[in-house]
Length: 512
Ligand SMILES: [Zn+2]
Image (cartoon, rainbow, N blue to C red; front, side):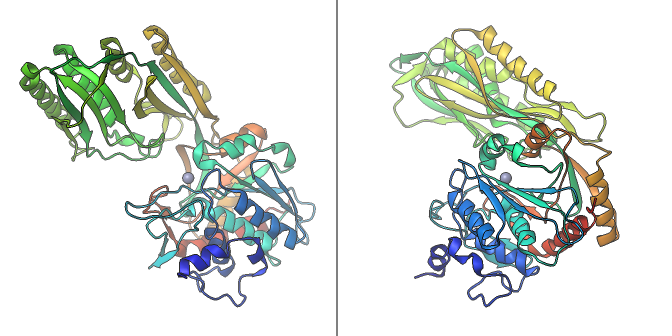
């Protein structure tokens, strides 16, 4: 039996009586400080828990609560709430909500066969960093769960009454926070642990919504005698569509539409399929189209693509130095093609959909206020779909951008429609936040330097809590993690102890 199997076999509530500091053998993280945090980090990492697969971790936490006589509540989709009374002298203080999410992003390297349904994460320490082994680490947001359990488990940390909410499905549209019944909470102040920078306190975020632009596909039999080609865009810098949008990086789907538009303007090419992008939060780095071209037009088609390619290389030489655009033979048979109307609609829709930064904040320097990213392009039997994700710090601007996309669909007609999902409100920055003031003082007290106060163009579940609990006061803190959502995800374990001290100092100061 491999060490890894041993780890996954023990992933259950039966293990919760093993406290940090006890005789724990075969622990990868033993010796790291704070011990209690890394005990729970490792416990939770053993439990498989991709989005929609959170029952086991929820049950583990329920067992944890029962073992300690703590009140808890699990809802139908396995969100869990655990309550703990305030410690001596803090019994009547206003409650504090802790928030984190139990699900993780499940990505593995090519050639790594990891069964995320059944296997926990194989932890690995390399210098200051903890990694997964060929997979995401899931520090996003195992960190939050482990911090919350560490405080719940403690007997020597002064704190107000606690209401710990650990949500599910955060990584797939914030379904857990959307569903959670916030009337079960009495607290009006919340500390979130889904932040990855120990040098800053996080104090506000955008909301976002995703929109599917759906063009009905009219199919025709491929005309005989045409040459199948593949037009491609690759090598772009890509990046996170909310954290990196200000970098003005090229969008592979938008560039593909430039190439197809240039070809369609001049030649009777036929389009068979288009695709691009990886998920709704990534600036697409690759896109491709399969098309049919008359033999006599091949040279001209190549010339057109070379000319567009030269333009694009000039336009994006700073942001996307490895940009590559080309046309090559496609070796598979192409049985059917889209009608000219469908093909032109696809190019028009991509070209006319707002993409990239739409507005900058005038109250916070260098902060993007609103943007859109055309993130995914796909072709099915029924339709060609262009998926956009629209973050904005102001809901009305988010909906105004969406409205432009909807009006474009209405203008195109012929059954074109827009459907939306994962609508999440913003959490506006509040410069008068009392909790932020307490946290800032605690930070200065603990580290003898001022923290940065960070407001982000990304969208977090905190927007939903802000909507559900009017007047709620929130901050987010966390240790340093890099490249979350990728197999390069890593947690700087040396930054956990400072965050732990900060958290304890904040709690000590929440006596009213
Ligand atoms: Zn995440």
